[in-house]
Image (tube, rainbow, N blue to C red; front, top):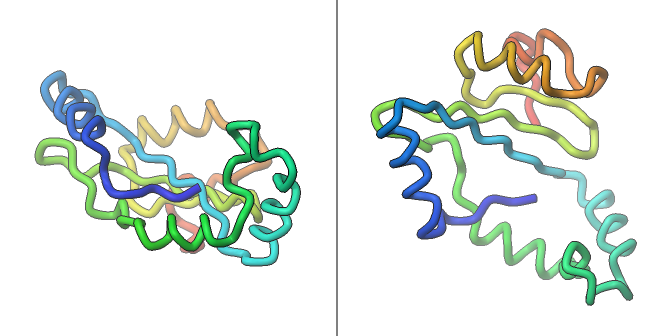
Length: 129
């Protein structure tokens, strides 16, 4: 899944978080393997009337890539927003921008075991998406 430019609804979310001293976390789900993307799209073909299967063509993926805004510079008030990247093809997580330890521990407890390594959650493995 790709993130596009911020919609008008996203700005108020970060403003609300900053006003109440909440700390958002961005989870960026992505797949960079073109063959896997094509395989997933082919499974959607013929089911375009189902909302979750509307994007069944590579042109849609290419269009979304053109709208892409890298989340690395997201800010909430004066704080940088932590970004956790999940490679949906390799089932790997790594921090693009580390969250505080307390947040990493929450993520550790929330995610199903086997989809990550402790080193990845600590941002120590140097893995890239």
